[in-house]
Length: 276
Image (cartoon, rainbow, N blue to C red; front, side, top):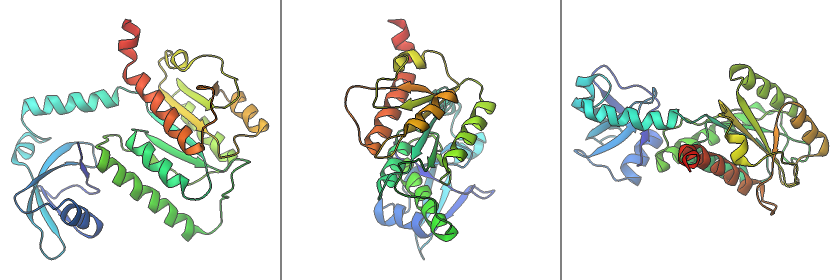
């Protein structure tokens, strides 16, 4: 179900005021009119229902449903139970982190969109040896790219209804990437790192890796030219497990979607697989 993502908390009376791109999306694209309702996610992750009060002067004024305000956190007790269950299902999955080597052109935009739709928790772009794009010193250019990616994530989550608050970091160098990986392992000692590689380096199947109940799953995807032998060695030395899926060589944008989707599906259905 589509959910609009609120960047700010409503006021003490449960009123929200939306302008600019948010107004355009809700009023011009979704054609919402006074009296209609739309589901939304608050910054704290709570799901609410908002009724449109007015759409005049380029500002949409909406009010959170009375049930949510009365309960304090949305809806009746039964509705709360259903919502908590839905969010618990997502929260029960270990976060999936996509470590994506920067591809050429606008492919990164597609990767970011698909990752957000697919429930990836965090995207960490980085420059590898065979990456064509390089990190530039132009802070303004980098800021615009970061803002575009964040906008794409918001649009993708609203379109897909993903309750996972996908985050994205500014691009890192290869040393910064491994520093980020060490940071992840310190926070979650049970983190699992997977290196998707076209060569048969795999030590186990994807099911076998995920059957270890990892706290976090980090998936590393190379650029169009793949990872260099030196980079592969560094990944393996820092604890990553090599993963080969199938016998075809995938484009980097396909590999990111393919790998993240496979991981998420197995994690979602792990209990049913284990029962069989």
